[in-house]
Image 1 (tube, rainbow, N blue to C red):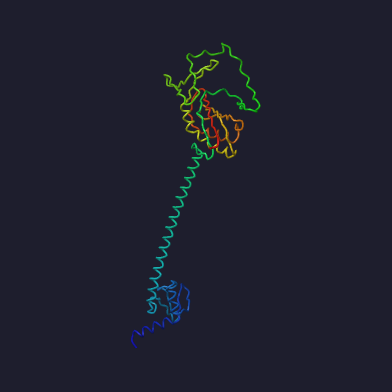
Image 2: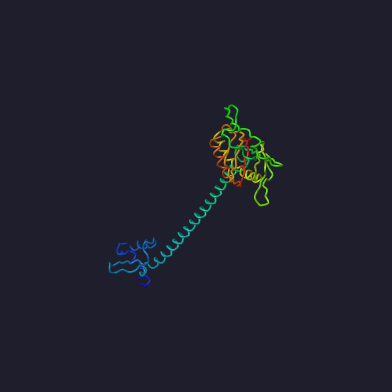
Length: 314
């Protein structure tokens, strides 16, 4: 019998034998040599695993046994290829998740941006109020009048408000001396700028005289007021849209009159409409107007009349 035949028979005998193997401090088995080979390919055993066919005292490493050396090498290659395939698959999965996450963020940002644009357009841009059509008349700026009771307008069907008792007529001695060449304040917009500088650098404004001959000095800048009103009047559209949502079919002419305090902030507001003098619309309008950044000034306060016509398009 040849040496090769003897080796083949020896390896076959090892594969048919019963083997014990160690895992840590445990001795497990027995397994046939064929079962040991199966565990090599599944990764449960490796070439470093100690096995014995003759009992606890004869343990050797699998890679040292002729019957298992080839299987140890082939199993190592197989497990390495499978590990690399799993790593590549995991990498592709992570990349897909990253791409999907970025796409979700971009789509979310685009959706949010579109919503913000639609919201801004619906609130601030003329002609984009859905079914609501809002027209604005040019503002009219005058010197503020003396304070009067809150119910300052009369409407058809409304009880007539009591008229404040007029003050006693002033005598000639009570009236101050009239100023030469009095100037009148225009009552339409746009208005010419009224500020003037005195030789000392202090704003002197424009001097006007009322029917009783009382002279007053106007220091507010009418042109600047016009610009602020024009720039910010669209911020009130949201208030009218909300009122239209509360009142289906809402349509009305809504004249407003507001006074600008010397600090440049709207101090008072009157809504010249019998159903809208107070309530959510009034509060919304007043709240928005308080944000308008007029310039501060001294002297007589300015009153601005601004009218909105609300109606359905078409």
